[in-house]
Image 1 (spheres, rainbow, N blue to C red):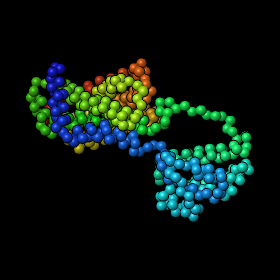
Image 2: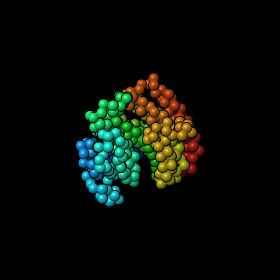
Image 3: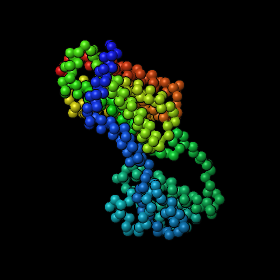
Length: 373
């Protein structure tokens, strides 16, 4: 294996990528608009949920409850009558409809436990699930604060002092921006190397490579370093300009350390792309194969859902995937400011997995390169 052959083969891949405008558009979109929209367009927390209130009590307590619902969690409450409540829910105008019964304040001050009816449009699943807890908490707090003015024994026995670390604002975009960046690194590295191999077959340039004094490992290594370098450069740009700049996400740890981990991760995923490219005979086949592989990798790696909430056997199986360890080290470095002394197990795991994937892909590539003509 000669270094100059690998260098020139990699440069050839870069020029081939430059001549593919659609792939360039995909790279730019994936590391800019895709990350920005994922962080800002679909919040997981409650945001401007429509709520209507039927105030049959017309008391200071009911007015206090009405005034507790305001943006950004809720839209200003729509004051409606009891007859309008069902019709508005059926028409999809309100996600929540709160019915405060008559003499509610009197029953509360008398020590009774009156019920407030909360109607929820469960077709809006995310808002319905999160918002029900928000409404219950808001009403309970307002009632306790109101009654505390009249009775001294309503003070809760425990005062919970919460301290939120690593994301004190509980800002969803801080999390989703970095996780989307990680997903794009995994996706683009597989796509670029796989399509580079398929492009050789479709354009007939694989015949030229076979006629040249180069070995399969040189051809494969040239594709791996070239496509990995492109994705790594795009990752560094996106992390600096989009994540830190446009989205103002605070990065706690060392960016160079994170990029070293990303480079090791790219070594594994680009090898996966080569391996998948040897099975696909065309771009459509590669796209279908990509869907079968990429979606489980992204969903089960711990970026979308904590690994602890998954079945134990899924956690064990996903330890063989490089992006599982990449998510761990990325969260540790970028969120918690972890150093190499903390994340070295993930670095070691990605290195071993990358070496295994590279050798498997190389064996498959050597076996099939003659049939690609």
